[in-house]
Image (tube, one colour):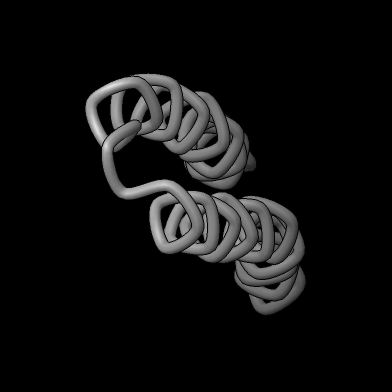
Length: 70
């Protein structure tokens, strides 16, 4: 039982590192782009939200794997 809890913790912990970094980079680059060209905010917002959603999906997959470990 103790090793399964460790496996679950590692699965979700390691699986959430890359999405967290990706979402941070997506937000930083979007804000940088909006800062350089404020009139393109509408063109930047939708792709930024889609990219953040896809990055978040990877973290959700890690959560599903963590729940499936028995």
